[in-house]
Amino acid sequence: MNTKLLASIAIFALLAGVISTSVMQSAYAADYGTSDKAADAKKLADKKAADAKKLADKKAADAKKDSGTGKATGKAASDMVTVEMAKGTATNTECGDKCFVPNKVQVKVGGTVTWKNVDTAAHTVTDPNGAFDSGMLMAKGSFKHKFDTAGTYDYLCIVHPWMKGTVTAS
Image (tube, rainbow, N blue to C red; front, side):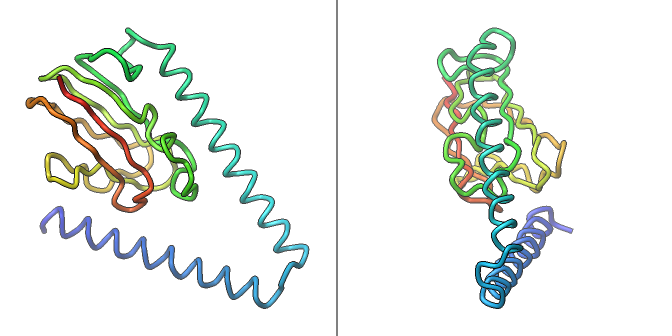
């Protein structure tokens, strides 16, 4: 069966689950208003989002310190670059440039970028222009792409479209 078809089916199933969860949460909130359970659930969700942001910020700072170790600092092009999909990005729609860490990388033409999924949710690494597509990357999965042509490549996670990044090959 076609990989893209399987990926489309998986994305559809995942989106259906997200929508149904959102509807159930809305119904729960309507039934129980601001009950203690609802307030506790909101506090827990807010804490998880804050923890995910702190972790993403720390990883970004660590990546900048690790220049010359195979991790990109977002400044000098390298032969090998590693990008991580930060924990909590599936539910943190405001992770911005902390969803992929580092968010903007440079690689030499002929160099390779490796994306590692350190989140618990499945993600994709997809260039909307068709240069590369990882398909669904489950937790602890990884995807490599060799950049043989100079250019700027914007990419995103199809399942979580707020997750965006850029690779510059030069």
